[in-house]
Amino acid sequence: MKPIPTFDYLNQYQNIRTQIQEAIQRVLTSGRLILGPEVEAFEAAFAQFLGESTPGVGVGNGTDALIVALMALFTPSKNDEIITVANAGIPVVSAIRSVGATPVFCDVDPATGLLDIEQLPKHLTPRTRAVVAVHLYGNVVDIPRIRGVIGDSDIPIIEDCAQAHGALLGDQSVGTLGDASAFSFYPTKNLGAYGDGGFCFSRNPEVTRAMGAIRMYGMDSSGQCVREGINSRLDEIQGAVLSVKLKHLPTWIKQRRTLASHYARHLHPKIQTFTTPANVTHGHHLQVIQVENPKGLQKELSAQGIATGIHYPIPVHRMKGYGFLGLPEGSLPETEKLCQKVLSLPLYPEMRLEEVERIALAVNKL
Ligand SMILES: *Cc1c(COP(=O)(O)O)cnc(C)c1O
Image (cartoon, rainbow, N blue to C red; front, top):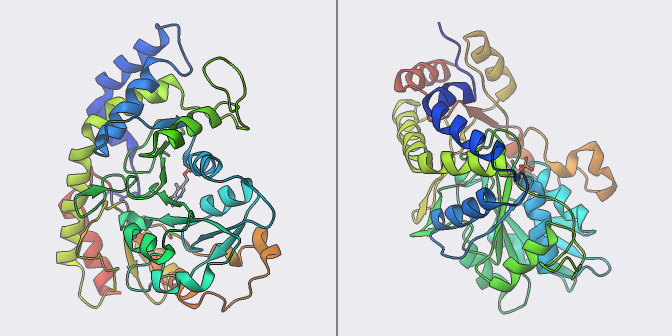
């Protein structure tokens, strides 16, 4: 039987090849490769996709988007702490370290896999400088509820939307709920470039202006450095590619939704999944199940030509590179339990319903 990968951009490329080639050709003959009209057009178009009229800021990748947003929202001092989760991969923690702060991990709610807002207060200290909430798998963290818990303090909330393009809380898009947000256009994401790309957004024009300066050495339009920055730009070719793909994004998300509902119908009720809160429209980036032995199941599915992923097998606080944080096993019980149970089944717009049935059948049997 035909193997089912976890991700297949070639299939999708065949459907949009002419538009993509035309867009790349346009850039190559324009004489402009960095920060020109293509990126500018995409920055407005993606903001519009989020339901907003003020543009965002294109950057080099999703991790840089987090760094740029963090740099725009706080002035580093000594012993800064930034609260986040440890089950969402390395990027957030890498970004927090890049701005010189220490990650403080809040455990997750086992029902949703998201930051457990009830446990947030015990992590707040006078050194807390920000909260980075990750909309993991396409599910949505209740940002207004976090704001309620933090109160009127000036602690900013940054949304990591790398896995949640198209997800909503009520009728409001992720990325517009907090003080600033970060998106990734890594090729596997709901909206993926043909290479790396990222995007920062804020509804606050001052924060947007700061992010725009920070992504290029902290320069303003006069070429003067007005604050410290980094260098992380979305390039014109990726901007043009992303503008083409953005037009298809609503359709692709709809297809993801249809496939996810098909999984829900065909996976046996004994197969545990995550809860989507009632007011959330899921972005369906990943189709994650919870099983006792994910690595074993992964092997058996692989033998049947079904590829799977594990997002993520090791919580960040238990990784060797973060040993210096000194967080022993047992510090985040729910996070640690989940990381031993999660398995991501294939989910991408070009999948066929029969393939979902074949996967569900194989999973149900095991
Ligand atoms: C992919 C991802 C990122 C980072 O994106 P890059 O573009 O790879 O830097 C950040 N956070 C989460 C949750 C992600 O899945």
